[in-house]
Image (cartoon, rainbow, N blue to C red):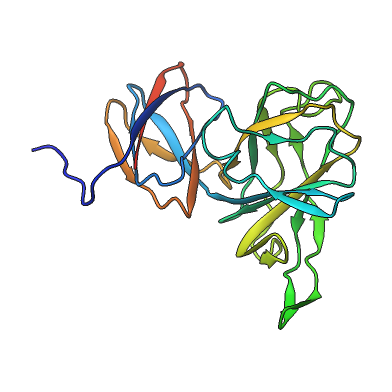
Length: 252
């Protein structure tokens, strides 16, 4: 007898992911309840935390714009515009758990200006008295950062992984941020060292799991993995050798 789901299904979608000894990334679409995954070779798997909030802050307009859906919906027709992003502007990313970095899918508009990304994490929690913020969140530079989207000294020129040294639990503070999110999350924010090209686009952002202790998955077995999309936002997969294909079905 085949599997019977406890609730009516709304969507079944599939994709394939080329694996190698370098980690590959796929996002989990919002509303996904289960992943079916199959590879003909032994492989390794980690489930990345959900990216729960994405806000762009335009300092000149003192305006926050939400792009959470645009960079997590697996739809190339939507994106987050970083067109001429100024050095005082920030992108805020809120995660369900600590992460080691982010995989960035750069869109058709790529940056051509020599610039790096300054990435910071929430090192203190916000304190409010009533509706007033009495202590704002402080941000501290990450260490050991490596920008895989960079060509020479120019960031956001190609798809790639931006990683940093994992911030210790207790040092990276989980917090809400006034005007951004009432949900307590682990935050990073980034800004460029020089104004970016117009246009510069980010199609998708996938969190990177917090270590390399990935699970061991056997060859030629279809794995069924229940998903809580409020906690899980992506998968990280690799193999020891060869270049097989991982087949992924997302069920909603």
